[in-house]
Image 1 (spheres, rainbow, N blue to C red):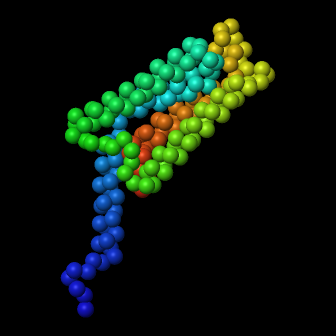
Image 2 (cartoon, one colour):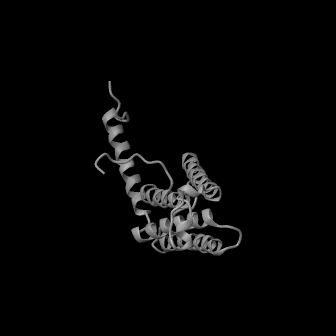
Image 3 (cartoon, one colour):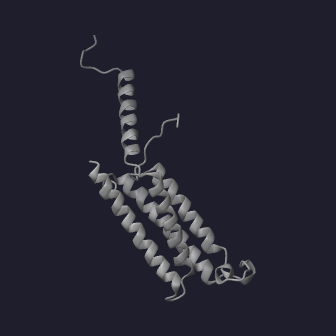
Length: 172
């Protein structure tokens, strides 16, 4: 005795796959253009490098301030241009898992930046690069921290533009 209102397991699985596909397509439509992702990741790397090598109020502090302001302006530009296209992307994820994911990202970036800063301040002379200009006399830590932050910002912004965990298609 089957009821017409009952849904079979195959139909339910098909409906869930369809919803997952629609969710992935929606998230892909919210992804910023590659030039913006590249600019954001490079500016975050510059901010990390400048923060790591800042000694008081020198020119690296200006680099940190300018790159930080540029990151904020680029994010605001992205939100504004998305709204002009009719897409209202929230700045913070609505779900709890998205907020946890965002908090873990912030913690990761903070740890990398402060470890890079600490390693630069207490950098050992034997691991310093040698050269004729002052940037070459820095330890490797700010360079490594900047590359880690820059690559992770690029990857996470491209893969998770809404900071939500989504099940990716196996074909991609």
